Length: 227
Image (cartoon, one colour):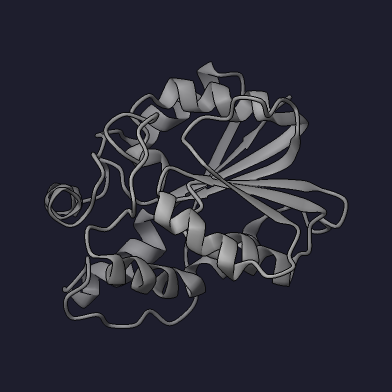
């Protein structure tokens, strides 16, 4: 996301090639939160991916748990254009933007992966998602980018230097309070990724021990239910 949720950007990373590598790197991680979702049959469900980037998460979800239709929304215009070219015949619509005007009680399930820490106004975002969900709808928001992350001071600098976005400082509790205030029933768990984690020498966690801790202990999955 950008400094203002209403301002569009081209890509999240300043380097467009890094945008492609990010999608490839996230792929094995996406499968794990999908496995954690309590909703097993999505065949008659409408799904929202907020901050969808190049659309990879929705394509993975459809391959594992096919849904009725979906919307992917993101402020990165170039990434949304690529998502459209990659979706093929899947029942997915993509939209450029950072708000959900016009989408009211439309979705049964919403997801986001490493997006909420970039949203300038978390209260407005929580209200947006709640309005877009049907009664009983669920929002899974995944992030390890919070002030309880011991790597956070270093990562703030990386985000500033490598991306077109502005990071926000929030704790896990800050997120819980914001979503509760919006009217969600809030619960969460650690991601506890159980797959093998590749070593990336120049990545966000060049200390390999940090990478192992991040994906097993630091990254959080919020499950937010609209009553």
